[in-house]
Image 1 (cartoon, rainbow, N blue to C red):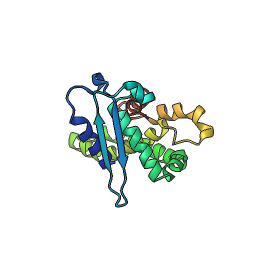
Image 2 (image 1 turned 135 degrees about the horizontal axis):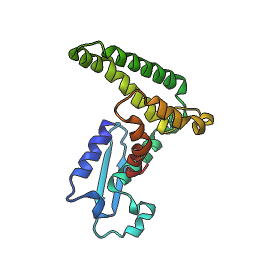
Image 3 (image 1 turned 90 degrees about the vertical axis):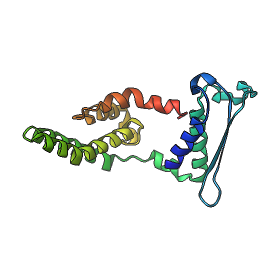
Image 4 (image 1 turned 180 degrees about the horizontal axis):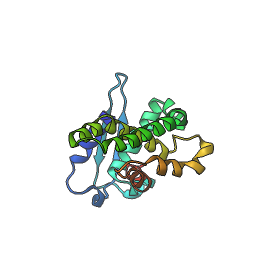
Length: 187
């Protein structure tokens, strides 16, 4: 992941002007030598014809890069596809309930603490439990938390009720914003 982020940032900070308005075609190649390292070449050309890119002509540079990177990773590690289809509900749902119940109890306890006590309680265990909540709900929005037979009926309910008692707006972000992030990176 770190390599992906560093490569992506390097690739997209070296241009001039906003990415959205350039609409320059892009050629991407990702290679994985036997030593496990990766190299990515991203070359935008002013002379390329957008029609030659097929379905990619409306995608941003970041979307094209991420799409090609995903294809290369799946080609090298095909077991990734099997992991994407597995449900984590037997671990994720109990952790979500436990985390949310503990956050609820901590919020009640915080009412009797001094300001430094509230700060310490929010740092530990509050921040850890909040991160658990976000990551489990992230699995829910991507459809990997619940078994396929339960997705249609329970996914939105788990997302809404599982976001409580969080004050950070996880439900609003995940329900209405997060998947837009994936569309912007070609997923």
